[in-house]
Image (tube, rainbow, N blue to C red; front, side, top):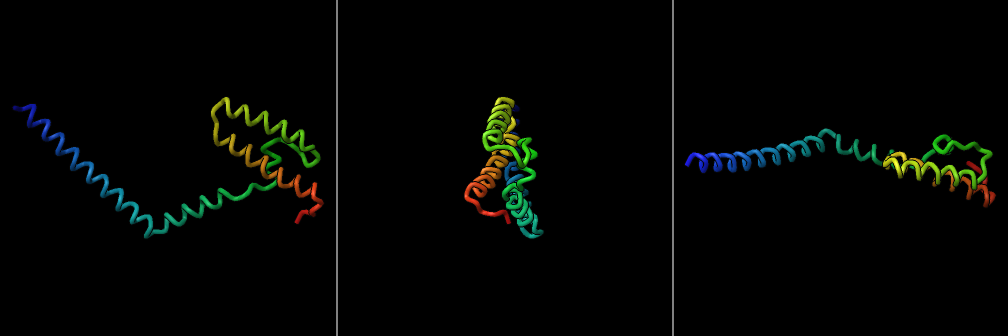
Amino acid sequence: MAARILANLIVMGSGILGRAVFQAYRQALANASKSGVAQETLQNIRRASKIMAEPEARQILGVTEHSSWEEILKKYDNLFEQNAKNGSFYLQSKVHRAKECLEAVYQKKAQGTPDI
């Protein structure tokens, strides 16, 4: 008898607690949208996804302005594989973005387009 009452109390209590957590989450979302936190977060995400600057890309890959494309690819492959083995997805993505940035620079140079 006591076990049944205790089980009912636990089930009812968890239901009440679940609803309270859900309502608190909804209220937090509403407060965030009113205070502008949601918009600020979206702006930060957009800022973070912008293209990397060339000096930063060169620093990440450890190459100079006079490095050949083959040297850049070797550095990229080495760093990408090292970070794949160690499990650092963040560093791996930074290395990839650096290669993309320098690839665009080298393509412009190959086409003869002057830097702006």
